[in-house]
Length: 94
Image (cartoon, rainbow, N blue to C red; front, side, top):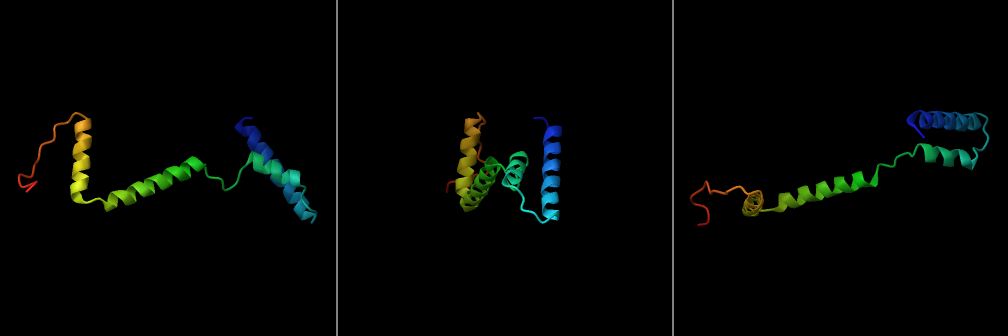
């Protein structure tokens, strides 16, 4: 199905449901089922939720690191990238 067909089916399903409701008649189950199949509501992709939570946890963990831990991690990443790390602070390590 292409986008035009999905939009058309969604509009038809909503109109059909509205007509049943306007006549104060119970909406058949298949109408709701088909509408959910065409247009899932409030279903943000699970992967997006997982990624957002992962970023939140990573930020919280980063905020718990000490400055020395952050520096060591940064130096480790630089070494992995092949960059030479030079200490700018001559008092470091004392």
